[in-house]
Amino acid sequence: MSKEPLSNSKILLDGPLKPDPELAGKEPEWFVGRYVKYGFPYTCAEGEQHVEYMWVMVNGYSGKHFIGILGNDPLLPSDFKEGDSVIIPIDGVVQVWGYIQ
Image (tube, rainbow, N blue to C red):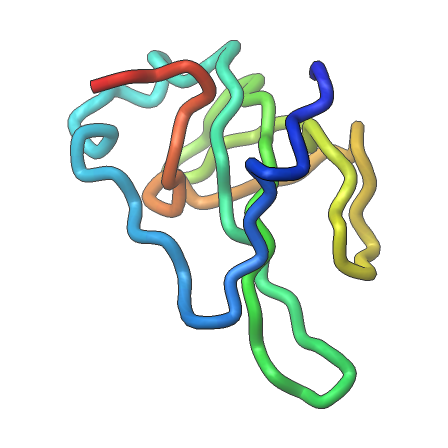
């Protein structure tokens, strides 16, 4: 994936983004081959819960989950790294790269 500008990075301390209701009507196969943004939970050293949004290239789906590859490195300390395989819930997608309503 091309490097996303840092200004597009999202680490939300005030709560998660809401999934785009327009995306809820799309069939799972529509997402295959596209990058989707998903909020990965993060617990800081003080025990507070936060969310870091990262891009995932969707390679397939099973039931209510997408199977894909993480498209960028996290900004926060994490066990994840770009290129890792991940499974994310379909209803947690908040954005699709390049998709404009």
